Length: 370
Ligand SMILES: NC(=O)c1ccc[n+]([C@@H]2O[C@H](COP(=O)([O-])OP(=O)(O)OC[C@H]3O[C@@H](n4cnc5c(N)ncnc54)[C@H](O)[C@@H]3O)[C@@H](O)[C@H]2O)c1
Image (tube, rainbow, N blue to C red; front, side):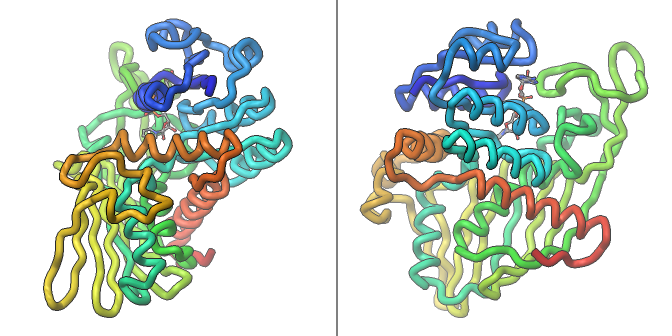
């Protein structure tokens, strides 16, 4: 695949690694400045997305720009004839997602979303077990996504700049992964959401460092820094009910000390349940009143059509890059016209709709029905 990347930040570097591992060729890279695109060090550098698309005509565009640019960049990519692998969250509103889906349809191209954590073999094992009824009819489904991304008192990220991420910070940035995994693994849809949002550290200081984006509007607070008062949530607590009757709660936080990236998915059926934690992705726990068992990832435990997901023998750790590569490789297979299952733009839209429901619930203090 001839691939182009839009954005040259943290996640773009991961995409570049994966494109290389999958045998793709990075033909162009576009960033906010030509200096940043040049410093990226692979592909022809641009600071102009339409020009890059016209000159390079890539097969696939990996959209790794800030959230509010995903729609503009994906639509431009489709109009140039490329497929799109767009970072999560798909956009900043459902309205933008619908425009992206229309553009994909008009161009007859595929749009995929980087729901990275779907690519872990044990997530797939759990999905298959739930579907086979191994835990019975799920009663509880819950968990958390805890991180310390914005723990430092005045830590700034571009998501705090008004207009860059819609009306939510932590659900857009982190919670969207959990919501996708919960529906994917359970095979159930969330039908009710009651949300409580908390902003613990409203005052944030932009200093123009990596990951902070361009200067935001706000009061200059000495030197070249800007004080921004953000009313976006750094913690979201959700009560959710699922279409199959399961109910549960989940907490998402970007200010949880000592939690770099804890994602827990936990479920109970009538007699047994499971817990899986992204930070220990090669094991999960099956629980029952008789005792608990730790199960290990093993290629042998995957169904024949999913065995490709696990390339190392049991006992040899696989991790984040392996999972992410699984997601990208499936999306690329579909783009080449091969049968493949991958997180689609419909799944991206679903994530945004769930977050919009949570925002409405937090604002009105009412349960929102989907
Ligand atoms: N799948 C995941 O788990 C995961 C992890 C991290 C980030 N992300 C997503 O990836 C996206 C980027 O996040 P990041 O952490 O890499 O941010 P970042 O700040 O490190 O990078 C953003 C990049 O976009 C570039 N950019 C800004 N405006 C641009 C424009 N007009 N044209 C081209 N490039 C432009 C910036 O120069 C920068 O290189 C976000 O949507 C984020 O949610 C996903």
